[in-house]
Length: 561
Picture 1 (cartoon, helix red, strand yellow):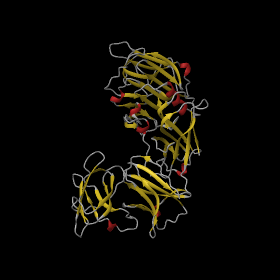
Picture 2 (cartoon, one colour):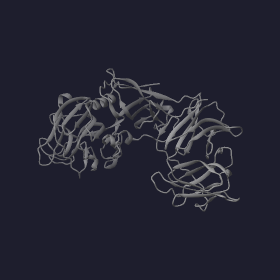
Picture 3 (cartoon, one colour):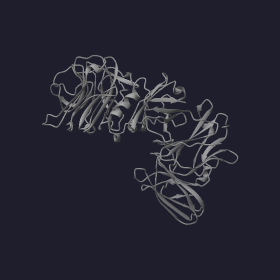
Picture 4 (cartoon, helix red, strand yellow):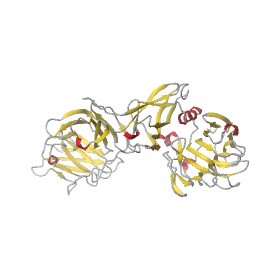
């Protein structure tokens, strides 16, 4: 037998139903002469007294699967200060386990030696519990087998298994106290236990697994190619949101739960990495997943990630705010994958960044499958998305990017309006915008400080833009220069050595202008996908890597068994 432990950090909560005695402050073992006083205090992870937490004292070596719960005679609840108090006559080594009935947080104080003297344990902190999955082959007799953690009240019968693959099954040990060193044992109702692993320590919220020799965890290897035959990246990039487009040729969708919630992604050292599932369609066998890649190496073809599924608890670990974090400069990331009946529906267009700048739906058509998962149509008549004012939009540097598809040219069409009002020629006041000019060019414009003539007017000529075709757009401003890019190439730049004047107190819009100053009829006629705004100027290499990673026919990512 061999076993493997892989760690995964996540936010798990397990509601642990507890039984408490009527007088929670004084916990006794009932009967006999109480000669030892044992006291301690627990706090929650956010620093408050863990009131009404269940506390149980478990003999070291106790088998929770086969021994009577009558052995757990020292149990009760903490008081309003988070304190507990045992009085008992037993001797030997015990573990003190506390669990909070509301948050599910737990703690374990190990190897408490009762030797006839009073003990003051001091303070300890409850933390998010961990989860451990045991994977075993179909051939294993499950009639009276179990997995347990001796010295605790944690066990699961093998008969409570779930099918993992055609030849394997899994049982899950829930609510394991974090940072507790423990032994994992396999046993039957009669006979001794077999040790599977010793000295295991799981961190708060981790998911881990243990399996027998005959089991191989289903996985796929993710390779990246940044050589000249791939994305041709010549400068290292860090904290990069990598797109994985999966098809039924890459993974067996029929073996994964319908929304992909049992999916996990690891780096080459086995550490889990943050990801967000933007789109998952099991019936069509297609998915779009964003993964936070620590480093994009230059001129290399290497295995970067491992994708696994099936063994993990069916809890969704898809979190956009960890992939598109505010610490990495993102102020808004809209995948355009949502829709709702009618219009004026708030927060339909969800922001994947940590700021939560969700947009209100003023679009009559639903989202549909486009470049990356789903995208959004704009009818050119009255469709737009509105965003409330937020201080996160008051940025000094800018990167704006999106995929766009134009259906008509020859008139002004606003794609993104982060300015309060329009001037003339066109000129923006109190902000910036991206729009299609009457000459067919795609402009990035903005204004400097009030009372100055400072402005940005940097554009992509109409000759570069093909109607009825998807293009990737990006513009940057670093308080020295403004640049515009199309399909990964820098098209033009202008000097702009001044800070933008971005005013607060008004809404922002995508698909039309904020206010009707200077005329109407500026609604965008086309489609948009993967709209991003950052408060930092990304490099030309970053923008090219985004394009090479996201475009149709990309050669940067490949998936192997």
